[in-house]
Amino acid sequence: MTNNRNRISTKDIIKATSFDINGKIISSIYDSRFSSIRQVISTLTTKAVWLKKIKYITIYNEDKCWSENYLPSGRKI
Image 1: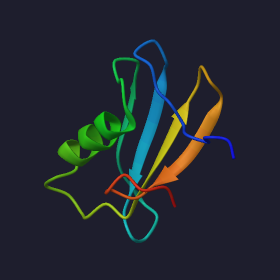
Image 2 (image 1 turned 45 degrees about the horizontal axis):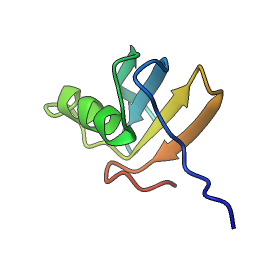
Image 3 (image 1 turned 120 degrees about the vertical axis):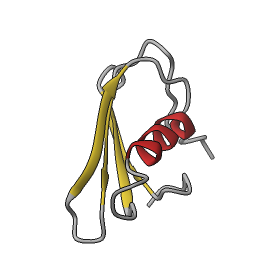
């Protein structure tokens, strides 16, 4: 069985968006300073703290060409 983990390095360009329960965008980021998925989720959560509750987060790694949906807890959907 292979390990199918999405990894992020500080050189990767990350585009991430958080959505509410209705599928509307709450916050988004586009940066290359992240070293983990947890950092990406934490940044989005911090930006959206005064807005609506985050339902899910989409993270797209432009350099490694992968995309995945996560819950605010960090678990894949």
